[in-house]
Length: 259
Image (cartoon, rainbow, N blue to C red):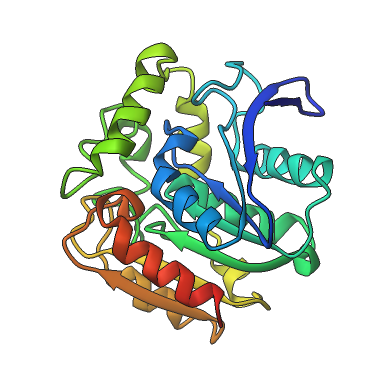
């Protein structure tokens, strides 16, 4: 299904199942199919699952405007309003986690019940007061570094069934990293720590111990920001924890949701 945003972009989404609502948000360049194993498990556990492709990703419309994290959060908000969602559980991986942070910053948390962020530091750039950003990224090199390939995001192969679905979308709707460079820069310069300090709802932060992008210990630093935040480290996993270690991730997610 598609809906049109307030700035005239067609966004593809899926809405399946009945019960408490979970909205899954994908990382930079990804498609909603990466959440395949989570969708199956959560529908089986009587949840309503909403997935979406951000603008310029998956099968959503490709445009050259609105390429900033705050606009992606607005797109999520507009979809939630369209579907009349309440008591939402937001789950985001990588840049999708940054969209969760942006959503919490921009909109009242009254409609959000809980949030889950997967392997996304609240600050991408390393500097004198934060050493847990994207590996090797600093204020001197970030513009040049982010023009280069980011390298493999995984430590182990993702689930075969998920891989097949993701590959199909990637081949039929290729991602244009050059078009979205502006978005990546906007993502990189954010600092969401103030948002997390003011967080009033429970948050689960899941990090991959072998993430090629972040030192897993960032999770414990984030946990110090607010007593509402709990960090779980998943071994034998890189950046895409939910598809590299789907059974373990689903277990952690369901335990968090049942509290």
